[in-house]
Image (cartoon, rainbow, N blue to C red; front, side):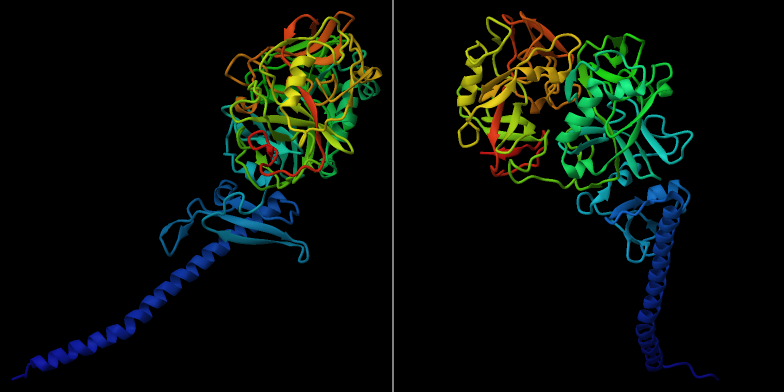
Length: 548
């Protein structure tokens, strides 16, 4: 007869098994965890290898700053499996690959991170950010060119293209297209920068265009207003300036140019993100007597070069590092440039100045928003980003003087700006006439010495960059940044059209003219002192530099 285990013996066996389990379970558990962690390391290696292979295929360029490459982009481009499982969590892996060119090793460094760092924690190339907007098969928004796999462009309405706004060099731009191989972006200013007559006669040769008023304005006046750091990043570009039915019939190589008809069509024409409900010139002639332009309905039109429409600059730049913003109208993509005082500002940047006047010229916040027009050795010239709160007649004649009617509201306004900020000495204002067919530089043949004045034809922001309207639907600016935008459809300039008429900027973005006895809007131009320290802001319309 077999003897059964006693209770004591059974308990002993159980205790021994328990001890063995206590000893072996951590070992087994650790082995499993190590196995999963090694599997995760292999998965990360695969992701980083996919990014490496992507870089070879797509020629990312040699950026020495950090960039981001999303896993979605690696999957869409076929370099990574559609489902990449994290062996530790058993969930689909997310995040991105951060990459940087190591010039000493002549190779990229790749590092997988989850979660993916957000802007502006890691400065990122603009092209890398924009690529995240692309999905295979897009027909609106960011679209891949059908004949060049490296070229991407935008097409569609402002609702379909809402995140390609860039604040760069004192101006707000829209990205038209970018090339992932050349690492370049083509930009157009969102606002008209001025309004002028483009030429003495329609160009029918390259030489005629290059000597035109509008090309001189773009590549002399506008170019010289840019900081050298911006100039150094603008590339030579070929612009199509031929007849509208054959736009590349004539081409020119310039730093700055104009939009052509094919680019406007590709973006979607009327109601597209390039339609700003303002008149602006295109680079193409319509006939031997007319030049093409876009009207306030977004449609193609043509007119004599003696007409004055808005000017929107087009440039091509090398890829840049973005440090903030989400690309929307209210939060443009931004680079890290920031001024600390008025001597360092860029032309085009915005400044808030404390206002003590009682006429409510600058709203309840008592801060007037100005935009920088130009700089000299001891001051900066700024224009009110809006209008004074009442309209005014110009005066009894079209030749302005400081005794004219319009100087009453101008002087009242000037008194509301403290001498702490305002340069109170006289400066030269150009008051020459601007008749049909004139060069914008012709207005310089007569001058007025004064401490305050009005916009001068041909200078920056002498067209409708503030989008005058009585409508709440602003087309290319944030209405909240404009002082008294609904006061008038027109505002006066310093310049005559004829002995009895004065040039004024209209709500449609043109320079037209009216009798000096008309009551139009008043857009003040003053000078601020150099070297004034800013207390806050970054120079954009939403966050102006502050003087208070």
